[in-house]
Length: 341
Image 1 (cartoon, rainbow, N blue to C red):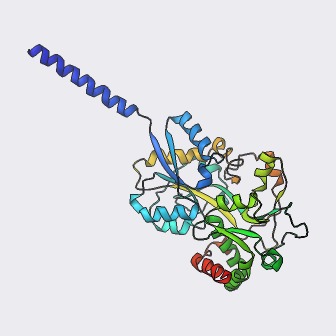
Image 2: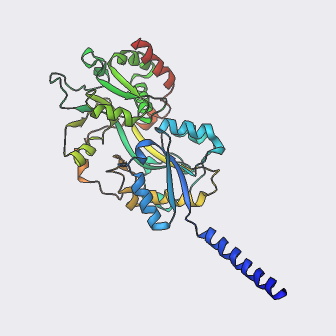
């Protein structure tokens, strides 16, 4: 009996040992909150997740939270209870609120050395840039009204001929919408509210996020949509079409820098840090131009041929001119809605 008990104890020890070993052998995973287009089938998320899991064995679980503004709202609302390890998809306009929350931890990334220095917005590297681009209005050159010409500046978009011809995004929930608000505030300064009132009749739709707005545009609902100067590269690459043109406005265009960070309350900070370092590699960054349709932050990446259609005379508004703007998005929406009643 004693011998039997001893054998059973030995067997139990072996079972417990191999059980623990198998638990440790389970695939590690990271939960990353981001925005809709990043995780869509044509976005960079699926390709990046597949490549990283092949390299490291770590499974990347992306969860979409809408557009960039909605993403930040969710992060701030959940605070230290946020069930995410990292965030991808904030931008330089949202960064002050994100950093002020104290939710993001400083990062030490080897590949940051290859990132364009003009894109670095935080000396502690709590939010790091992975791509960038200029906001612009995209024009449908085959619009049904052949007499309608594209506007040359923000002011021309308020003319009667553009009535219900423009699609924009909500500045409360969308980074392009917030970018438009910063754009108009930089150009019109303390008269920006008057501009939004004048612009209101030209607005066909104000969508919660970029996906919905651009989808309406490509369905032919309007000849103008708020997007990025790089958007025509998508149509060039996948549709072999130059139908859609990025308009270059004489007053200049705001630059958007897209950012990623690791939440300090994550139990996997080092693993999340490793993934963001991977996101900055030349290999990962090369995925972005023809999935994200933005310029990669890594200066070593060669742009694909489709980017030849992107206008090279887009002038960026000075960062200092827009850094403290994008104020009162609720007021901007109220102005539009009141003018449309």
